[in-house]
Length: 293
Image (tube, rainbow, N blue to C red; front, side, top):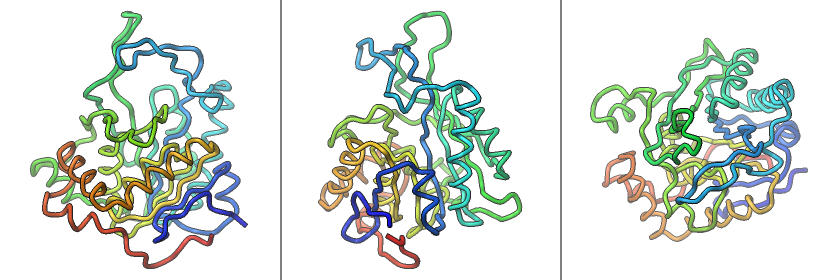
């Protein structure tokens, strides 16, 4: 029996500790959407710049490459079990850089997914390139795929068009990296900004939907999901990251803070109208299926 690491009082946010492949194989439940920020296999002794200082890019053992074939086998194993946990009309988003995104695309295709888009997230404040021998890295890539090639997926086309000034939204998103206010409970080495996850969730789910993150980290996916009235399951193997995720969700129990975060998101990415902030500030109403633990 799976025992949650943490569950919010209204059951819209659950954290579980463990290996996502092993845990997801233990229960039957289907999610509307999955966002995965898997290891990029980058922690191999490189350096970067953070706040004007030279820092190591090593994130930990979990992010080290084990070679092309082993990295590919790892990607295929977790993507396979995630596919099994998606509804037939569900979609998955997977982030990466050139280090892992091609392996991910290969796995998605081999497993029967239909790749819908490769989003290029252009960062407005990327770190400089120290070697001055090649172009500065200023983007990450997010693959969006649906489970079944012939089963229609949900896409909130009109909202995406509206927040893009009345024209079709393109697959190049210029959005800032993580803001200081998003680190109020502590830091995570690969934390994604709320503005990116909020756009993804609004684009591909309806209120009340279930969202899964198999490598939850600091659970930006879950915080965005709850702010927007969706429900969430996050999985991670690291106690420190799960404690950080728990603290971030407990912040949202403060209504004034929840409203403040929604206001900041609106200024960052125009995800909704100002008049909608009060509506979105109400926690998700639990209806439909619940997690079996």
